[in-house]
Length: 112
Length: 113
Image 1 (cartoon, chains in turn green, brown):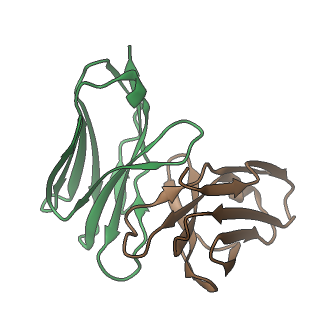
Image 2 (spheres, rainbow over the protein chains, first blue to last red; image 1 turned 90 degrees about the vertical axis):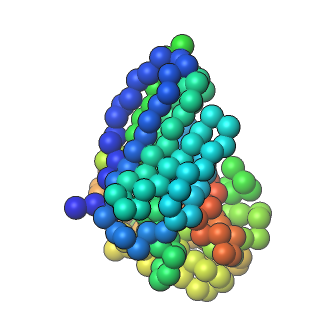
């Protein structure tokens, strides 16, 4: 079983829709939770990062972490065609080897 | 891409040949990483470095070696390439104390025939 599970999609939505992307994890030691966005043929770029539980908002993006359920989410409001990309969740422990563990990514297509 | 250059961008090689991929950064960041990305597996850590000549293994290090003789350069070597090493390889960097914030290069598409 993978430490981080993510639905690969693809997820297709109309422009303006609210998008919900999710990951589940099994390692309770994870304390840092990130969302990376990756456009086709490009490297991933950091979109959102949260330490421990709670919500974080940045413009149209909201990241939520529920450590009791081992579940994280990324919400995109008023989705745009430019949001079409693969979204990767990533997690890291607070101690020991501080390297990220990534989900396999969800491909999102926003239709104009 | 945050001052990170990977070379080559594309490479086709034959099984059994040695291959070296290069990552060069201009950010003077202490930490450098090599990941591979495969469908269904996401990004998996191969090796990372926390300083010149200081390296450690990741989760998929078998068949790979690395070297870091200068802060700005991190080399990944496949000693004897196999078809299972066909993948997209990404280099990433991070500042000390910010391991959650990785900056990635544009990747190298490697095909082993």
